Structure formats: structure tokens, C-alpha cells
Length: 497
Image (cartoon, rainbow, N blue to C red):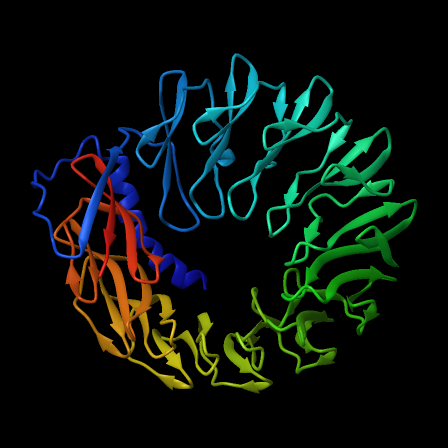
């Protein structure tokens, strides 16, 4: 996966480099006339200098951290925020829907959280990394200090003061919020303003809601005892804990625990086999919650366990696996033997390659696509290999699972391959995106040639730009959006049928 990501990042680095040099570069090209299906809205000027660039998770919004002299400020979608004495780079966050922006700032030695261009009240400190949005972006929360006391600010309202706090967490429905709080040497979890049972300690960063937001789990400590608390009820007793995972339909909960130097996975209170280790982040449920799987360490070997049954041992299981297909009927992972890698699907090994990356199931679960390397890189779809290239990136499948596309590198040129058919070669390509409407799959991507960028939708080129910063992405089932710049001006570009 690392190789493929490096290949893809080249196109984004082209755009980023242009942004950083935008004040010194001028292509001298006039704005093209209006093209059918494409529209653009002027957002504002691009900054002359950039300290940091943050893209929204939906790839439809962008924020720049800039400044001159002793002042810094954020530019969100072309609109400047107020100036401050300092703004930490890592404090800038978008809401999950990408429409809202927040960050911590310093002014006159006070800490301030700015949300959607509006500065909040000054505090003595703001807890690092504590600024969070609800999943729908409508609510916000963060931890702040007054003297030697800490509180949580939720939707602009202060909680009671505590001696210490843990970062707040919103439930998936956005209606519930929880955080850890300490008074003296006792900790509790506060859910929607109501404190729960007291413990000697709460596992930092362990609070997790179920997908339906009806359950809250975390790690707690009491004396020498460690246990998981689910809806205020302790479960099990282990020497240490790791991951807590709810099933997608919220009916099941699993976690990893250490006892007598052995790790086990506990699902619905039932412990599985003991191992020397459980790979962090590997515990996963199938979409319907009917199955679970994880990767474990057994001596110097690693293996995948499905529903409590161990699979074959390998030298290692690659990070990010195992994964279920969307319908839960297939389980896949990448296994390593010596210097070779192979995909294992429902226990069956596919051919070995030098490297494997980008594994993805089709939305209908019938197809499996991944990139493999044997000298050069190529696509493997349902066991069939495609043509060889110097690099492959951004494998995508259409919503109806009938069309697949990926970005490939051929020497110093880039191209998009759709259902095995290679397109035109370009100097760079941004990400690719599918939409599906009127029984037709539409593919969009940004491409660079002769120093200019354009977005292509269904083969139709749009206006020319000096760079593409975000997108193109699907903005609804029929439209695509991107953010681009031309002559030092930012534009939101939209394609509509």
C-alpha cells in the first residue's frame, strides 16, 4: 500500500508545489469561456504564502494556514478568518461533512477556539487534540483550562470544572456526548451531563459509542483490576485492554484483553483462544454483525481467526486486514511468506507476488480487485491479471459494480484505465470518482498537460486551471465538485448533467 500511495501523491504534490509558489508563477492564460455542464464560483484569492494545507474529509473544502510577521490566520474556502498571534498546524480540523472548520489559536497569551470564523471565549489553555465535531457537523466540543481546573465546552456552554478531563466524544447520531473527568483521584465518564460510576482511572482515548449511539464503552481501572465498562456495567477482568469494537448493527461488542501474558479477544463476554498478541486495529465484524475476525500473533507467526477458528499461519498479516465483503460472505487479507505476498479469500490463497496493495471489494461483493507487483505493477481482478505499469494507484469501482478504473504510471506519464482500456497520457492525475445516474456510470478525474489542469467527466474536458486542490468528488448522485485555482484565484467548480 505504501508504494501505491507514494505514486498517487505525486499528482497532489504537483498541485501543492504550485500553491506554495503561486505568488511567483504566472501562466498568463485568460479565463476560458463557459462550457456545457460546467459552472464555477469564485471563492477568493489564494494566499501568497502557505504554512499548512488541510483538505476537508469530503474533498470539497480546503483551509490554508498563512501569515506575515507575528500574525497568523486561516483562509477557509478563500475567505480569511481573524488574525491571531499563533495557530498550531495540527489544531485545524474539519467537521466530518467538511462544511465546518475549527482550530485553536493564541492571542494575548490566551487560548481561543475558533469555529466557523467565530472566536470563542479566552481560556488559559485548550486541551491538545480535544476539538471535535458531531458526525453531522452541527455540534462541537473541546476541553479548556481555567487556572488549574479543566472543563468541556459543548456547543458553546461550559461544563462543571474538574481537576482533569479526557477528550469529548460524540455519538454517531450527534445527540450524545461523553468525556472522562477527574475530581481528586477519582475518574468518571460524563454522558450528556450526567456522571457515571467512579473509578481510579479511565483509559485515555478509549471511549467509544455503538453505531446506533445507544451504548457507550470504555476501559476503567480500580486498584489492580482492569475491565471494560459498557453502559455503566463492568465486563471481565484483565491485566490490560486494547481495542473496543461494536458490530455495525450495534448488537455485539468485542475487545482485546491481556491476562497472564496472553492476549484474547472477547466477543459478547466469551473469550477466544490465547495468543502472544492481537494485531492492533484488526478486530472487525461483518456488516450484519454475524461474523467477526482478527489477526493474531503466535510465536514468530501470524494468523487470522474467523468466528473463533484459527486459519493457517504465515510470517505476517499485513496491516489493515482482515476485511469483510459488503455482504459479509467473503473475508480477505494479505499474507506474507518470506519475501512474497498473497491474497487469502475465505481461506484460499491466490498466487504469490512481490507486493500487494489497494485491495477492494466491489459494492455487490462479487468482485475483488487489487494491485500486485512482480517487477512492474498490474491489476488483479477476480484472479485475472491486467497490463503492467510502473505504478498503480486509486482503484475505484462504480456503484453498480460494473465498471472499474484505476490510475497508472507509465514512465513519467499518468493515465486512467477503465475496464481494461487505457486512456490518454498526462503529466499528472488527481483522484478519480464514480457517480451513477440514469443507468449510466460517470467517471471524473483531474488531469495535467502542458502545465495546465482540467477535470474530465465522461470524457468531456472542463475549464483549464493552474492547479486542482480538492477533488473531483461526487457532490450528489448526479454531480461532481472540485476546488481549483487560476491566476491566484480559488474556484469551486461543479459539473451537472
